[in-house]
Amino acid sequence: MAKRFSENPRKPVPLMATEVAKKLIAIPVDVFPTLISGFIVTADGNGMVNAGIHSGDLLIMDTETAAQDGDVVAASLGNQFLCRRIFFEGEHMRLRREDGITPDVVTDDCIIRGVLVGLMRNVQEKPTF
Image 1 (cartoon, rainbow, N blue to C red):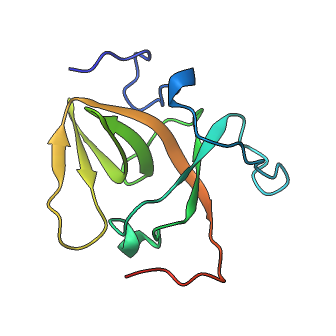
Image 2 (tube, helix red, strand yellow):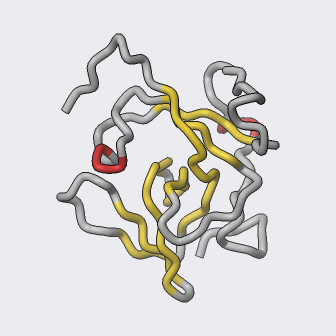
Image 3 (tube, rainbow, N blue to C red):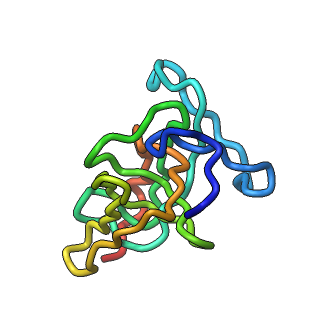
């Protein structure tokens, strides 16, 4: 089982300084007034397309809110950083891609990094399907 820094597996574990993104983007406080701490990550690929998340979208992740069943989260699984829908099943977590093809992954070795609270998309660019 992965080493956690939180006793609650639903609570996001902060990213370490070496894992921080390449650039800083300001998150508008008036749009996300309850967001205390978070980060933005760029979606890569179309594994979450059925959830309305497309490659290139900027995903706004909350690092203070505990994940609930069905939330979309950023998670670390081994050396992978994933965006998946999560379901809690006893001691295990089910990670679901929203592409209608890929089978779910059931694990107890997942670390939640953030819970999706919003996204930004450049509508000038067409998503790739």
